[in-house]
Amino acid sequence: MTRLIVAAGGGGDAVAAAMLHAALYGGDQAVILTYAWDRLLIDPLPGPRRPDDFTGLQRLTPAVWAVPTEARPVAPAGSTLPRLAAELPHTLALLDPSGGAEGLTHQLEDLVSHIKPESIDLLDVGGDILARGDEPTLRSPLADALTLAACCQVNAPVRLLVAGPGMDGELKPEDMADVLGPVVHTFTASDVGAISSVLEWHPSEATALLAAAARGVRGTCEIRDAGLPVPLTDESPRVHEVDLDDAISRNELARAIMATAHLDEAEAHSREICGSSEIDYERNKALWLDDRQPAKLDPAAIWPQLEEFEHEARAHGVSHTTFRRITEALDLSGSQRDDLRRLLIDSRPEQYDAPLWRISDGA
Image (cartoon, rainbow, N blue to C red):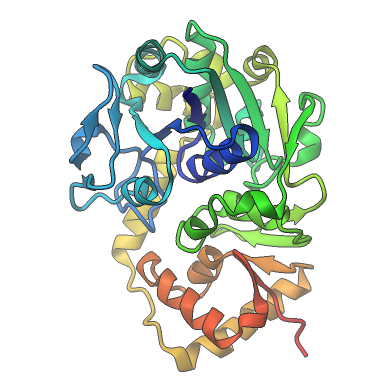
């Protein structure tokens, strides 16, 4: 028996898909269909990767490639998918949005026809798949809108699940309360075991917050380069079912891109409807990163910088943050994140609320 889970935004949604599968379905293997679309600290190239950007992929169907452990991104591209394939007991399959929503629909239909899944879940951590498009806090509408548009057109029943409403910092839980359906599961600490090793290195912030909330962490977590505050509440570890028709009725971008045959067409719609495209943001940030000289990871200099950062965070009522946020706040590069993480945890293990960093009380 095979389950198919579509990771709506790629990245951390694929990690959360493994946790969801273990919680809802147990030991059966799943196929997790996901983008190779990592943040710039992993992949310095803006936008999603195509099959041609990898070596060692395995053809799963005529239209879909699997990402095995031995696959490698072609430099200078980067990807977390091969390492995820090594650590998760599932088949990772590559979503390629270069052909727009029509191309994604074809890939989905081809995969469904081939594996004949027992069920199909479309999973989004945070809920920005429910965005209307005009929300001022919306940062990455395109990836989710593409998968939503494709799933609405595939000739098979698809269940939309939103885990951790608000965990990505783009929409507040109250902004989507009117469309969130019944709770199908509430993640607990025992559920996190399925992905605990991945959380030690994967840079996803939304899934890290989801896992922390499942482990009982409560407070306010600061994320991303903009320092967005995200509350961790009893609602945070819940998984809601959402009516697919309701989602597409809300998401103007998803409706507009249903007939797109190229990614640049979908991008143009995103600029028109949402005022931006996350790929444009990545392009601009990549240019900025190319021009800057990141600070060196000097352990002696880290502590006063960290204390200043924590002082400002406390003043804003922040109780936790992510290691990605600390890395960027201290003007370090993405390649230094793991070294910084080890330094902080080894030196102050009492502040590690896995997988988050707890802001000191200033005493």
